[in-house]
Structures are given as C-alpha cells and as structure tokens.
Amino acid sequence: MVEASSSPTVPGAVAILLHPSIVPVVDVFRSLSSLEDQYDLALLDGPEQGLATYTQPEAAKGIVSDALLLAFALTRQRGRPFSHRPVGSRHGSIDEYCLLALICAARNTASDLAREAAAFLNVESIDFIGPLAGEMVCHMESGALVFEPPSLPEFRAMVGDGVFEEVLVEAASDKAGRNVRT
Image (cartoon, rainbow, N blue to C red; front, side, top):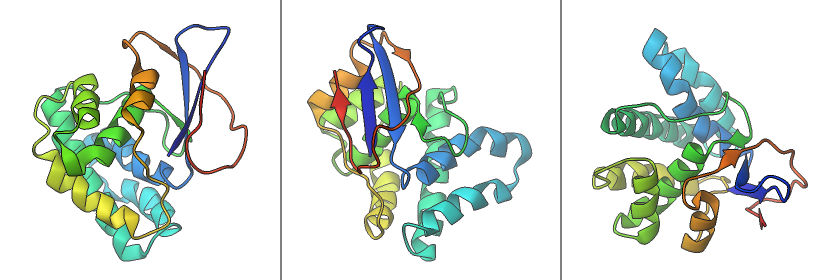
C-alpha cells in the first residue's frame, strides 16, 4: 500500500509513498474540496479512469461512488477537511495514510487499528464506516489494487505520538508493498 521512510537527519520526519494502484483511490478524497467548490462530477473522471487500469470499469465506478460517500461522511463528522497532497501525487500525507489504514480495517471496526486510525483522524464514531468502506474494499479486492492494512506496530511507528514532520522522498524501487525504514 505504501512505502514509508524516516530521515536519520530529521528526527520525527516521515515520508509516505503510495503504491500507484492506490493513488486513484486517494484522489477521490483529494478531489472532494474541489468538488464542494464546483460540484462538477467530471473531477472524478480521472480517478475513475486510473482505477479502471487496475480493476473492471464497474468496480472502478463502485470504488469512486463508495469513496465519495465515505469522504463526505468523514469530512462532515470531523468538521474539517483532511490534509491532502495534490491529485495524482504518489506522495501521501499522514491523514491519507491514516484514512487508508481506517478503510483497510473497516471490516472490523472494533480492531485496535480501526480505533487508533479513527482517533488520529478525530473521527468519533466509526460504526457507519464499516458498510461504506467494506463495500469499497470488496470492489478493490476484485482488481489488482495493492491494498494491505498495516500492522498495528507499523501504524504506531508511522503516527507515533503525533509530533512529526512530513517530508517528500522519491521511490527507491518499484516493488509493491510497504517498506518501513528507521
């Protein structure tokens, strides 16, 4: 799902590199602020076309639809938007990392990973996320999307105590999956 690395020269620095197949999923969430300003559903064509590269067109439509509903619900519950990188960027923000972890854990909203990701994102009630994200994950699993939840220790290593600096790094390899370097 992501490649993460920390900087030995900048304590607390975290860089997140998303797998290319996950970028269109995150782009739906990234497009939300533009969508609220313009309400032009054409803004979601790019993420949908990107997803169609990795899954069937019907599944891509389902992922976009489910992600859009989830994005609206989470943003409304949080009362503030997520911190996002630009549309199309493989670089992810900590909010995007936590959002993906929350979606991965949505089938078991009582799990420690789901609870901790929700707490980091200031999402008070995660009960409604299960059905929305669960359906989205089913669509994603039908394609070639690299979407694996982090372990709880990996998640905690990434978010730590919440005091960090995000940095941008370039991919060291094109290997799928996540690599945590310390």
